[in-house]
Image 1: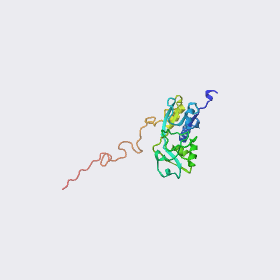
Image 2: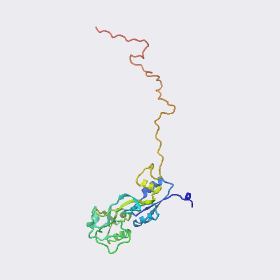
Image 3: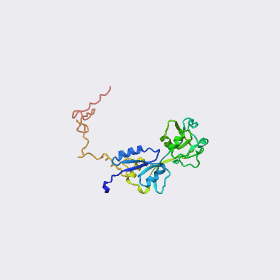
Image 4: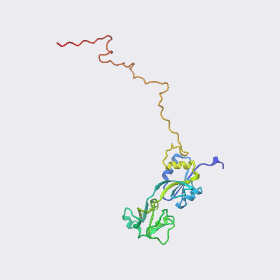
Length: 257
């Protein structure tokens, strides 16, 4: 297969909790001839997928190895605790880690939060995944502290969640291999950063519309006077002025007696 037979495409990885639909839509509007393929990956596997060329760029959870990857931090998520709807926490607007001291706090193996000390009491075993931990919360085994996007992803009608004010937070970033900053990667960076379609960065550059010319029309035509006017005083008869009969004279005012 020759180079001319290879059609460009872009592969975008994303971890659970990230919704890339907005950026994908803009890509499709700006580069309709270049397909974008979404690659769902676990948070712990994202760096490996990017390193091995399984995706050109990806939405990942920080930190990443900054010696191998470039990263643009995008936003920081609120951390919440997922509890059954009849749990005491459900009556509060927000809680602290200390408020969970008497609860069994589940700690799944795919946890994305960087804990120094996990709050609450530990479970006998660690669930394999966040999805498994959610099932245990629904069964009344314990509670789960996660980024808010994961609580929404695994939403159940019998569960609710509340912010935890002093828990670690997870940050989402756009990342890609530092030595593979291609034109398509630059295009996607521009979309994520909100650059316009006329930006000079990346491949997607559209010529600016020409500005209206300030020069006079061809032929140098001047503005013509309105119909019926032939001069500065045409059509005007100044009161008592030169517009009267030729040679006309003003009468002298009568002297009062």
